[in-house]
Amino acid sequence: MAVAELAVALPALVILVLASIEATNMIFLRESLSATAYETVRMAVRADGSTAYANARATEMIVSREIKQATVTMKPSVMEDTERGEVVVVTANAPCAANSMLPSWFFAGRSMTVTATMVKE
Image (tube, rainbow, N blue to C red; front, side, top):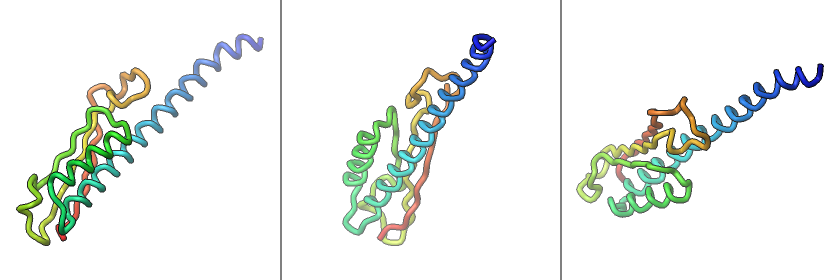
């Protein structure tokens, strides 16, 4: 009797555990992209900030958080020409499937995008 109960319950428990791990991994991806966008826009809006500094910070964050296939875009794209008080928008994007721990059909073709906005100092 116990073997039958185990045979029924074990697959459900394994699926629940794997789904929980994958969900926390996607939460980590979202928070990592959020931190990347924030740090990038923070470097871009500084009075002495430049496109090169912002791109270097974005790359540093992506590498340190081990985000795969991430892209970071800035608008306006050249910070040196941006006037004080102008809005700067940074968007960080990464495909979910590339950053998934498990081979996942659920995240296939989906990507996660985070935007951070600040005003140039």
